[in-house]
Image (cartoon, rainbow, N blue to C red; front, side):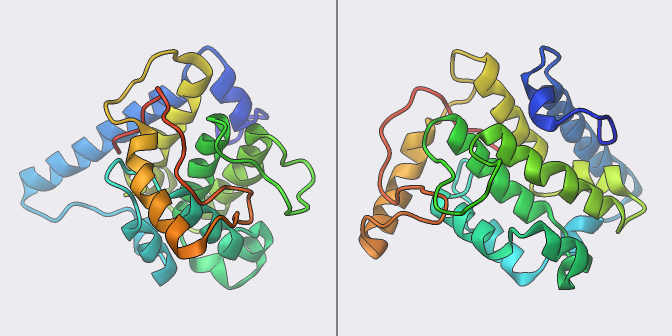
Amino acid sequence: IFHLELSWSMALRAKWRIGFLLARLSQAVRIANEDEARTEGAPVAPSRCDLAEFPEDEELFRMRLPNGLLPPHAAEEFLARHGRVMAWTHGAARARCPMALLFAVLNLVLMMRMGRAKVTGMNLEGMETPEQFLDVYFTPLLKFWEEQTTTFFFDLLTSRWRIFELLQEIEATYWDEEPIYQEPLAEALESTYLEARDARGSRRGPLGLPVHAVAKTRRAAPLL
């Protein structure tokens, strides 16, 4: 699927549940990796991508909520600072793992699918929908890392960012009517939004995401 002439947004809207299958594959590879290390009495083999993170990526990882998602304002601010694809392919970021950026993008795509974010005020033609937003980033960043490593699939499937579980949640917004997981997204984000509102007022971020508490939703958040 990484080289087919098929967009990721189209794959997620197809009936074959590609996101679900990739999430299960990622979980199976991580378990097998841990079992092999336990059998041999050796450390768990890390994703090379995780080892190539910058300090800003580690900072973003520490900002995750208990349900595994990012506060929306953190995702959009990270994207505003690090989201220029050309800087990754031609700049100093060529040795950097792109998983943190992908994670921020997928968080915002999920918010857009749930009607809690939209791209505004960034003059980004062709990025008005979550599908366009996803396709602008996903394949270019995957191909970028593929050029940097000889263990591409292992890196991707075992990365601590678990992007395929989040991709599965985006896919579920097209198909599932009932919550998959236990903790409602709005409840998990509410305290973070309130803290951000107190610190920043009612200002909106660069993606048009309001920095205040969101209404309750019946869709649930991924426990990554």
